[in-house]
Length: 400
Image (cartoon, rainbow, N blue to C red; front, side, top):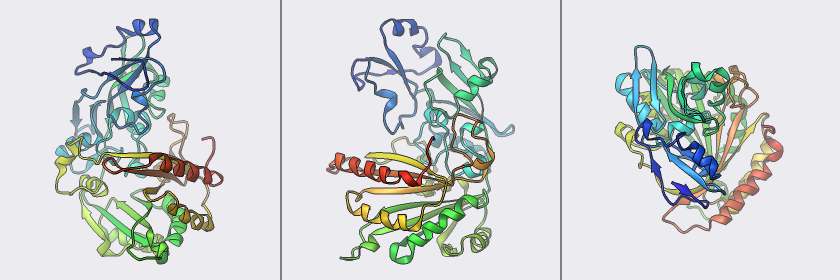
């Protein structure tokens, strides 16, 4: 479990809490100049939990997997080796109208996700995962196992939203469960540039973050193959995907008042349970809830992501200037726009180390990548996303 180059040559897996080689060996690690890396869910975009330029020790917590759901008191304890899909599934086994405010993709591990903040379909209603953590157990550098009371409020503040592995090793989290509607309505409306996608995206900036916190509408912008030679405008599309905690009739009424330019029409909407909506947005069959327990049920891809936050609406002309960039090396690229507002406007930026709160209208996530099996000149696409990211500098937030 000791590595002397950038990438692991071996792993040390911990199956029980006494199996964690920390901090009994902590003095040995320090003596030999070894850094400590921890890994739990294996969902680190940049792989920083198991990459280092100096010799390091990797403590793998992926096998710490236990979930205890208490519906009556609306709490759950979850160990850091679990995924959010497993957490959602165990809650849904006991209640259709309770869940937890965390991410969308079910293979995300709770260890790093909660430590870094953790947002998903419910964050406009209830805030981040970190905002709904009410206790934790952690091993500090002296070998003590601490809970919220024994670590103190400053320590507890620091481990929720600023990233993991800094102040010790979190073993499990105590969560405050949140209410979800028995019926959730989802929809997707896709428009090309010739169908006024640019105007809708520009309008979305003014509407999405001000909608009631029961609804979230994200936008995915991508290049697609239209099949029409010479019709480049048809090759760029914007997909407006929404989730509403309530029935379709209430959703249609709300959208007619607040965003009539988009719709959606009733035939674009589907009613389902909250947990089924998670599968819908990750493009899995909504009848197969057991997929949430499958950590391997995802495509393996090479990809690169970067993100920005927007405080003021981006001019329409700037969106129009983005589209030609998709015809450079943007063939496999997409841009995701995620609205903030709602509960995020109510929580002070000092509440946790996660600072992106009331001043932000929405987040931009830039992505480029391709499935592993296909040949990919990845440096070319890395260059593209970096150029695009730099191009957006005048229109996004700074510090942070």
